Length: 224
Image (cartoon, rainbow, N blue to C red; front, side):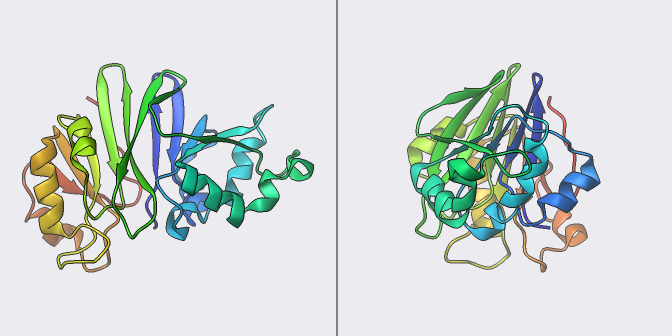
């Protein structure tokens, strides 16, 4: 399934990206509510489940907070314009509460820091989530990491990072590049995500450092 992460921390529930597989993922994991959605960028494999956010809106009296870069939010308004029109923001539909972000902000008890990264010429964010003394960095689509962003991620407790394939790719990290980024960031643990079909879990697991693992559908992780 396409990459997405659901985080529960300090009583706050956050969804990172709404993949085209969101409905099946939410049903499988019994996810019935979220407090906010963070978008990394506007490629369809990360926003294609937008319409299925309506199920989370049914439980809310107000809109569902969506956080994204200005460019990503503009793309969402273009792709799903009906949801942002006042006449359609009623019960039964996605009712977005859009927030364009460039600086750290809070979702409930979680401090969220958006960090620009380079990916395919579109404005793309990695996110660092911090709560209860633990830090998680999520970076599923990236080709290169600006030094200021890399510095802000150093020493995180958990890094979830793009690891598309073994061979070089023009817009994603390959395995060698992913491991180099992990070595530079020095997380306690790292998880490779957004992997192509040739990244066999069993084979890949045997090639990775002790603190690095490949993700799989339904993977659950706890901190610390």
